[in-house]
Length: 230
Ligand code: DC
Image 1 (cartoon, protein in one colour):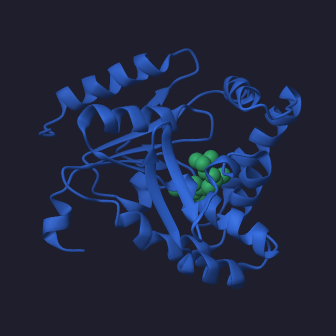
Image 2: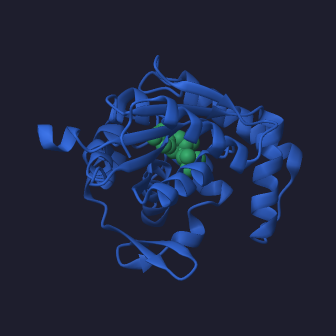
């Protein structure tokens, strides 16, 4: 990576699913006028492509090849971000439970993770980038100017996810979601490569009892206190 690239500031927001990191990262990027990377969407895209091609979540090699050859395009439409895979709109499928579970399984493979490193770093463009994920501050952008690790207890996260899925018209069961979230936490945190954990220099924020706006206020305060020039 060139030195010039390193001058482009990155803010990382890592944490478990349902902590609010996606919404927080997107709003922060909007407010700052920076680019936004939803790295989980890349893992989810590999999952959708694998499901469509009949590749099982155990075939590391085939999944690695798939991850490095994905034909993906991100765009903005009137009501938010749209994602095209092989030229087809698949935005709506990305957040389903099937894809959540599949993506968490394949994210344990080093071939899949390494295939996505370059794609993620390519989002670092002027004037800056807000990146959301699990290993943004630890592995992908270790030189980020501000690192946040956003968490919340599993019950609060299951309730938020329940509300989201309900609003989208999916039939969901709260206790099943709670169990799935616990399983996913376990898998994401215990994997050997790039496990879900705060970077040593991350600011940990517990959002269990906080609104998105309150989390954003804390992050803006952290930015004010740091010497990041915006
Ligand atoms: O953030 P998300 O729920 O959309 O992510 C989906 C899965 O992708 C998650 O279970 C773990 C994996 N993931 C990852 O391993 N590393 C990232 N930086 C982002 C997501």
